[in-house]
Image (cartoon, rainbow, N blue to C red):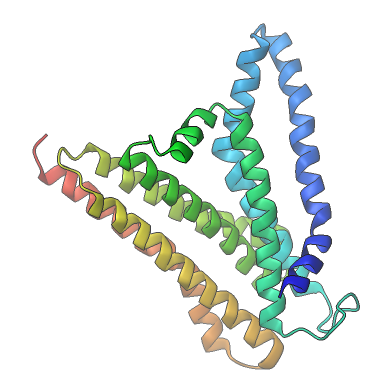
Length: 262
């Protein structure tokens, strides 16, 4: 498995370099915008890094996941680069693991440079509040779910752009509903940890459903190329499972807020 992940890291290196180049190009553009808009350079850089932290990390999750999924789908069944034949599941796990590793490296770099580094330091030191720790765990899992959704959608469609857009819609909707539910939970006067753990359980179920969908799509392509459409339909439902679960969580959170006195 380690050799397979190293192989996928080398295949996906270009995507990582491209994302780094996009980040590098955005810096002089932000400085130019600061001069044109007569805004301080420090304020412009903080706004740029906040943008990358809030929207850039989910965008990178879609990009890395979709590029890995489309690349795996479009490569030959027996890759010429592989020293030994690899099973379809092994290749899929290795490709997704490589995408997640590149995503983690990029996200850590952005967070260390962004205004959120103070919050990150509080989490690492253990001084953060209980709700902040739950939100951090929820955010990490939600970003991983976006990457998984992009990977599965791109692998299923065989197209990086279409799969990325579909994965962004599914994973992004799940993240938005969870954020809404979590925000409403914070409004409750006696909000306990159980409600936050419920949100974590929802995103874990979404991740499990997405992983099952990837496994089903890989199995159909490699072993059941002329059939298995029922399982493909179930895989699509599995990818959308996070949206259904998170929307139900947000709805229940809203009912809890409206029902309790402040």
